Image (tube, rainbow, N blue to C red; front, side, top):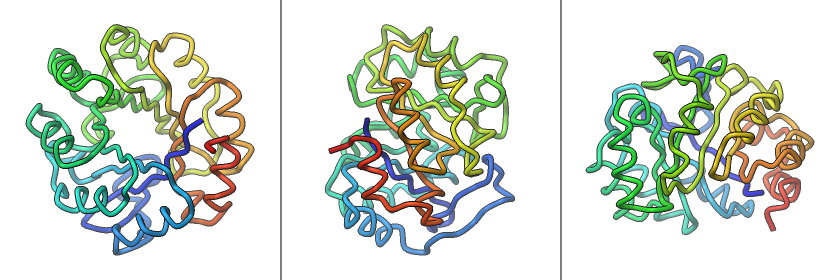
Length: 239
């Protein structure tokens, strides 16, 4: 299983939110490029980057920083947050990002998602952020009436690289992953599923791997030093 260390950006800082609440922010670093170097030194083979300002505003607001981070990383990076147009997706991919994550677009303009994914096969990730199983959009501010599993099924034939499934209730809480919701997603998904939200222990990583997830995003537990990145990579079997 792939291990994806997460770097969430807000105002140029490395932050973590509690359950996606912009009013419950913890700053873990003021130099995201330095954080990239820290993760690379720990053995990271890929990075998950989120532009939280972009997710909220609907357009990328830290794209220059994201590109600098990706170039400094020297490993595949995926970016989410504010990717809501073909132009934005193309700009990131042509600048060296390996993948772009589209979430709100899957609800607001699914035809656009299909078009971008067809233009860039296996380089678009469907981001499904769920609150009680329903897809949340626009930086998790609004909750749609669409079930995450239904959106996954709707895009079964699209040439996506993966699905990132985030359980908002557990995100940033260190409460453990929502294995029940992940199993439900795995049962219907035609693409590799990357789990996000709640990872607190090495055993959490092992459990996510055991149920069949192909990837796991880890954020707060790494920043709080609940375990080391090398140990997380080993628990994922990402050798």
